[in-house]
Length: 270
Image (tube, rainbow, N blue to C red; front, side):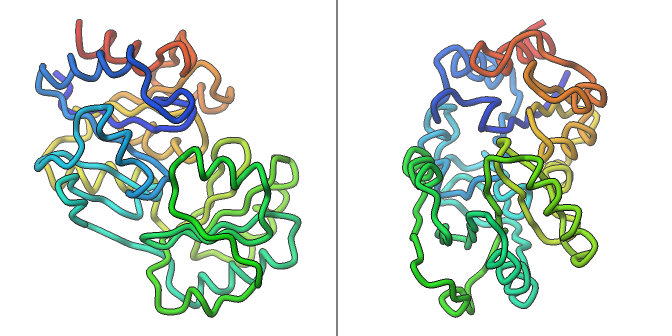
């Protein structure tokens, strides 16, 4: 019997930034069987509160969420921080300065706010839809971020070939950074060793759950570490072929058709 299910949000659990009713019902049945449901997302904690309401774990003691790709782990009751590991200030500043000379929108996530530089109108609308607390910065200056806890930095461009080239260059200069892609528009940069695999390992250890009793489902490259770590790693139908090849289970359905529901019915309800 599996004890915990970790789910990515964007392009996995959500449709139009909400949990569709078919996924809500499947999650409710899984939780009734004693299976914990934990969101594992690149989003910040303050971007997921409505989602936690929709899955039934909002503001509850003994319910948890993994944010910032594993950089922040909270207990949902009062958003109590259990574990945080972000980017050190000098490292964050160096990454930030590299973004100045690239054709990208730069997003800096502190614990409480997303600061957007070189704003892209589509990205601003996306942040509004995600209900993200954000500020658009007119001046490209790191000083406003000094002294703040920086969780991660994203470079955004809807050109994955360009972003892959950027990542290849950055990896040579920043060996102390974990890089990943998400939503076919972001390079995500966390502290070295921080990823969703780290996040689910930390929480399973905290809850004294063996990773072999965990299921994880996602769609993109920032989900790969948890897909590989979990006892059963699943991906949605629209995942890239290389992600499908390393997954234990590839859903027949895509996210908007109910891939999370499919996984619950196959591995939990049976």
